[in-house]
Length: 510
Ligand code: ADP
Ligand code: MG
Ligand code: ZN
Image 1: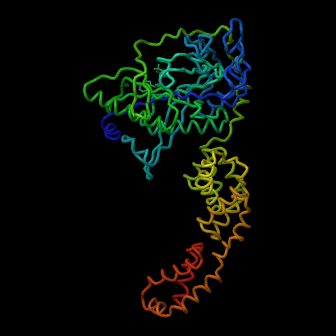
Image 2 (image 1 turned 120 degrees about the vertical axis):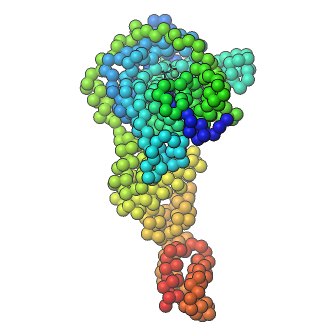
Image 3 (image 1 turned 45 degrees about the vertical axis):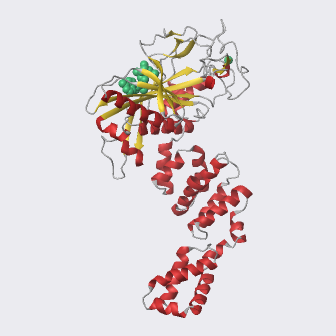
């Protein structure tokens, strides 16, 4: 197979995503009051409604509708006041009702869009667009709709290969997840590269997290995507036949699965074959996609309006009450961090994309100048992220005290400690609960900026090496390095190089 960049010279990839998010932060399911809880004892969170018992009547969860409207506002959608739930025919034991309650032609949210800023190496995947001075570009992605539906239960197949149903001896079903509210966002076929698809998913995750409507755990499946992709010759406006990669559960898999599928389709087309409309599965281990099922005819789900659920007529007041709850979104936060704290775009974006990191940053950078704010940002993006990952913790961990972070940032900004020492102080603060100022004093770190001490050391060295001083003054400027090295050595590598270099030069120049 050809490389992706080679393929994209002749073919235009057309990609559309369907992204499912479970509204895991809600207390109860979509149409009943059973709690939503991941990992609970199987079948302990069920009732006649989510088990589909005859005669049980569903009641829509108001908080879930508020959540989907928030998602709609955040993605620039129109809110549909007159919408309703439909029954979609379904036959599989993970849904006891034998139909899924979902939405028909009109969803709660219609016609939205998100803009993606594509930069860095990923931007090179897009060959047909002019790049800005930094090599990046903006991609405009239309959102067809966001609709509400309910999730199915979870099946476990025993005795077969790799937990698959084929060849299994027994299958177990857990209905705890059945009836969990799910929102599905469908994009227009506007994405053109695997990198754009990856960035879209990432941006959407950041938005949903900022809205607080889902925990968006891709490992636990509360955020997952289907990637639809087709190719067409460059210049053509017609859509090609697409294949669909189902249930992608990581950004990397979404990128790599689509990239593989584009290369595979190109090979088929270039050797005179045709693409069949089919659902495929990306196998990250084997690095390939395999056929799951071929779509022979249009799906016939026998959709019809659910007679148990009255159509909605959302009031302006209800919609407005949701709209005012819209929090500051990552893009707006990034712009504010740049304006208010003088952060570079990259730093501002990294922090604004994570609500907890942003909250920590703002607390620590309260009232500081831009130089200190930049140091706080460095600590959050590099050292603290690494610590949070290593400890499987979060930026809300109480061992991360904003005031201590601010203190370390000040010590770094005024060159009292080097960045290497900063890491040491931070580790002591996080892992041993040390006070940063006390730690710096106890470990003699501040002497590194004690100009008097450095001057005395340089004087002593010059007296001991008169020949070298003379040679330097005779033009051998490289000897500055000798004196610097000696001072650094005497200070056990803890000295502030900028300051030492400055003092050594001054003294040698006499
Ligand atoms: P399906 O009926 O197979 O689910 P839809 O028309 O509902 O297809 O579209 C599903 C997703 O696939 C959407 O995100 C849409 O933008 C995308 N899509 C539709 N047609 C194509 C195509 N030819 N190539 C790539 N993506 C497509
Ligand atoms: Mg589909
Ligand atoms: Zn229930």
